[in-house]
Length: 115
Length: 108
Image 1 (cartoon, each protein chain N blue to C red):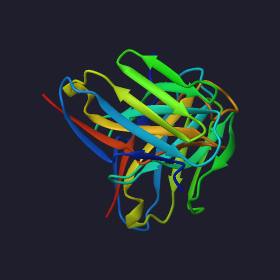
Image 2 (image 1 turned 180 degrees about the vertical axis):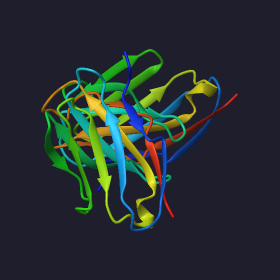
Image 3 (image 1 turned 45 degrees about the vertical axis):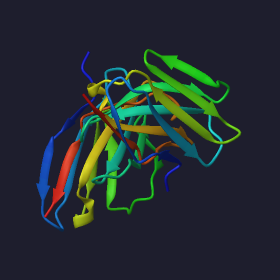
Image 4 (image 1 turned 90 degrees about the vertical axis):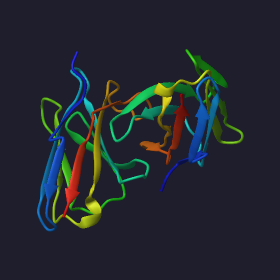
């Protein structure tokens, strides 16, 4: 069974550009979560999608947005990139729809570098 | 803001020794989870303990939870070099919130 897959593995952008990160959850998982991990720091919650709807959002500006498709895959878009957006972006999926209380399965992440 | 805070931030031990990491959190929880992250990669779930449980074991891992003190500990017994990683606790509020992590270095 394939795990959570994220693409691309690495992404290099310049300040002001837009970045699109993609995530495919484990088959059968309907919830997708996005986290940002800046170098040496913990994970900051970005977004939670469940059954195609945005269920919760972390304390990030509106230029961080995303969506979940009917096949439960998800995109994270970051507009007007800033240098401090450089981080590892982790996607996770969960088997338990509507709940944040259970085990998450993580992808390997997309390393975004903003120059 | 972080819900969980791990302590210590970094820990270095020799193979065979035990490693203990602590997590403190701020609000009431339904469960607390521990995850492991190898250098710059995705996190792997280790163990989940529910608020009505006090202790849980999984292989060489032992987790305790004290809801009155809003704290948890993760004990890794007989550590191995392969245990070298960062360890995070995660608590559920309206979303799963991770702490800042403990970086464990196990020397052969």
